[in-house]
Length: 413
Ligand code: ZN
Ligand code: ZN
Image 1 (tube, rainbow, N blue to C red):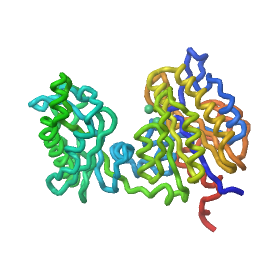
Image 2 (image 1 turned 45 degrees about the vertical axis):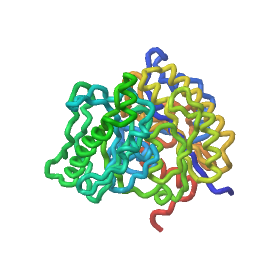
Image 3 (image 1 turned 90 degrees about the vertical axis):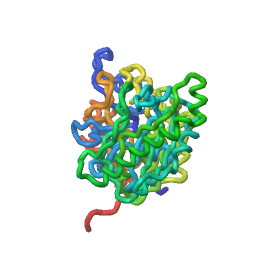
């Protein structure tokens, strides 16, 4: 038999709550989805609590759990994954931040947190601050991301990450001074001092930068300061291959998910037609998954549009996304190589009614050769409760996959 392979497909924020206008069905329940129902009928179904019952999961913490890494042990903040997601090489012990290019006046008063939503020249601004040396030998690695965003890595032995933000999160306020959350936390006070020095120097370097002189001449807000936030220390995690014995690739649409995947050593696959929104081309993503399986054992895929629809309180958009997901599953069921397991689930619920993530469990199905097919024959939040899995936690998913693939080491004699 061919060596077993697996695809873990996560429809971001797919879970929802009953909606009156949909006859008290969820968008997943209301959508036409012949392929999803076929997957459920042939597979083993159940509910999953991504982290634990009732816990409102973020996409990053949930993906960590589902990939077999307890987020309570490994999650330090989204900074390291945001930085890894734009291709930065985050090392264990680095402190990484998400950043905004912003506009301040001479008194450090923020006049525009997004620097006029600057969309060109940030590569030159980034190059001007990247590589600067700070006091205490702290090294600076900075890279621009899309629009006004970027990421910062501070590198030195013995840094901490428990500090307050410099970004006051609204305009008309002064840039804040980063401080250690616990005054006696020496590693974090070194980081706080480095952040404050970085912010001050970013202003000194950027205020007269040619890109900003040009912006001012055009009547645009200059990107004259960089404000870091959401700092976290690069966690000490085994690679996915060392942890599970599987060579893996990721097909995802957001920097955050690509960052989680890259941090644990998965190969990142760019799909130009994947937009991260409801207009994304999921068949192009499905084709990329099938292609990657010729080189790797495992593909993680995240489809983002379902979560976007939930945040936007757009049930019809979510229904349309389920239809596209259904076509994607149809393509995968027909085109996956022999002896490939397919797992479909969500990283959390994003109910339209609350426009954010909730702690409601999500449906999950395992499909492939040898799976114990159960009585459940439809894929929805409520009908999967008739399935054989019962209610599992995210941290169990990789165990179930690797034992189905027969690649897991035995516990005991
Ligand atoms: Zn998510
Ligand atoms: Zn979300």
